[in-house]
Image (cartoon, rainbow, N blue to C red):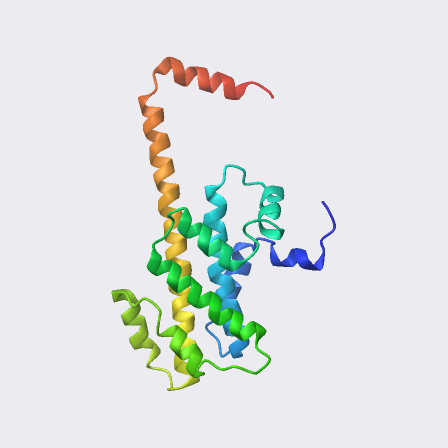
Length: 203
């Protein structure tokens, strides 16, 4: 295994526990910059998992070429490609870009930002308010007004997007499994025996 470099940390796929740690960290009273970045990390991770499943070649080396200097080297490009592949609609693309824009503002600003900044609030107000989202927005108002409310709105948006992406991936996996089972059932006994023998032969 090649020796890792510092830049490699940005493309390593997290283990399940590591992904859960990111999600759990958002539920605590974290610094606004931490909240903005970790929320986006959680969403981008689910988007990456979904995009990777779309490619014929899923090995780490190919993925590295795509994300290091290739067409998937930014959150923005991943959002565009996901939309181009028909993974999600325009509204979800819009919500993903809101998370990306807010993450970038916090990560690159030379001033210390807070979620009640008028420009951050304005960006959050653009988010799609589906029936489920409206329930979450009401819950967000339980917390004190000001920065805490809008921080909670951002966290809710990130959780909602990452959950949606995860569900899309699960549905896609179930669909593939169902289609495979149908093909197997449609095969003749002779064809099934032929496949079994072929797979049992040493390579």
